[in-house]
Amino acid sequence: MSRTPLIAGNWKMYKTGPQAVETAKELAALCSDVQDKEVMIAPTYLSLPLVSQAVKGSRLYVGAQNLYFEKEGAYTGEVSADMIKAAGAEYAIIGHSERRQFFSETDESVSKKINAAVQTGLKPVMCIGETLEEREAKKTFLVLDKQVSDGLKGFGLDDLKDLVLAYEPVWAIGTGKTASVEQVEEVHQYLRSLLEKLFESKLANQTRILYGGSVKPENAKDLMGIADVDGALVGGASLDAGSFINIINYNAV
Image (cartoon, rainbow, N blue to C red):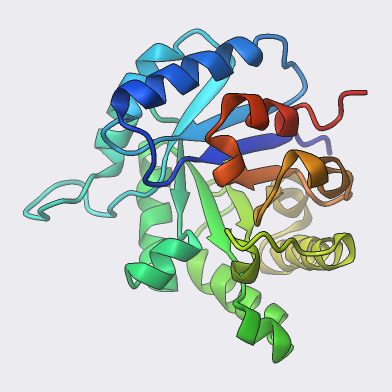
């Protein structure tokens, strides 16, 4: 089954509204000839509607960096899936390691957020990954198994038709360290087989599995050349349009 690569830029807590619009417009112009893959950018909540309007009609997709699982209510400071969809987003990043580390995100809350995204028609980008301590203790597969199994518990095949997995080894995020080609290949093969075990081969074959963790123009081609890698979730290198387009065009001669 052919899977369209997805190159996603997580802008984290960077860029004011005007700065985000400027970068988004620049990137949209650079992506005008990109035909063989999807490109998504995830600005802050405040910039989301501005960026969505700025790239309307372009080849760029827009996503949110998070969401809250309740539809509405007295949840000061939170933003619902409906609000994100209305702001122009098509994707939502859920369970990023920084959310897990700094904001007490759990597999249970990740599952609830994925459900909210699915019910609203947003495509969930579910982030998973092990810490350096867990990798050194040879617990990588145990950690990933729990994150995927608990995060997707109770969902049916139709619910997950637009699911995207993003494997981000926590020890390689923002550290300059990158997992080796062999390490990435091993984990992505495992995740594909895990999806088949939990659901069935159709879902396993159609689900895009991204790699995230210090992806740069210099290593993008090698990482994207791995059979079970269907794109990238890029952090710092996506903040500059000129740098990001070089990752997007990893397969250019």
